[in-house]
Length: 186
Image 1 (cartoon, rainbow, N blue to C red):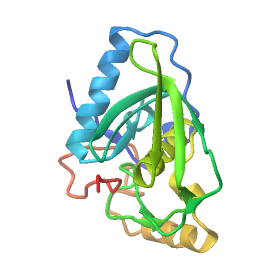
Image 2: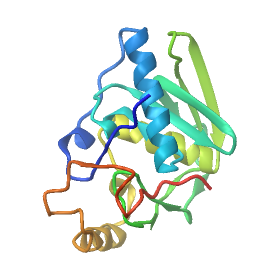
Image 3: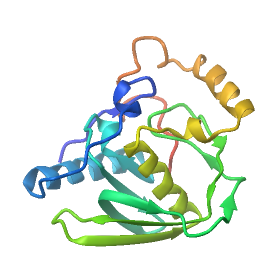
């Protein structure tokens, strides 16, 4: 399947809530294949459909040997335990932009697979972070929204230093770009 360009911070699709998938068939299978191929090319841990310009509630993941996809996910955070000292980045914010991002330690994600069958993924640590990060993308949120005020200001200042930002490059980047995305596998 073809590798798709990744939409960059500033593209309106990243701030728009995605629509529920209603058709389970070949088009959905192709979308999931494209997402996996693009994720592999970017060496990422997760990728949501809006990040390749598709406004549907679909994401893929590849974390700690667990690889899969989620259609129409619903995220549940089963307790109050947090992971507050982990750096997070995003393929839509390339250039090594990592920031300490508070997330819940555990997450449960329930949704459908490409055939419409129910699926559940439970995660702790990095997997929980990935599930939360990708579900945020489907809701039109980015990890910058989770940062404290000081880190948010620092990130916005760091954005100004990026070659791709503000230079007519807020729409897409590809694997051929010199600066890779930052939500890499650990």
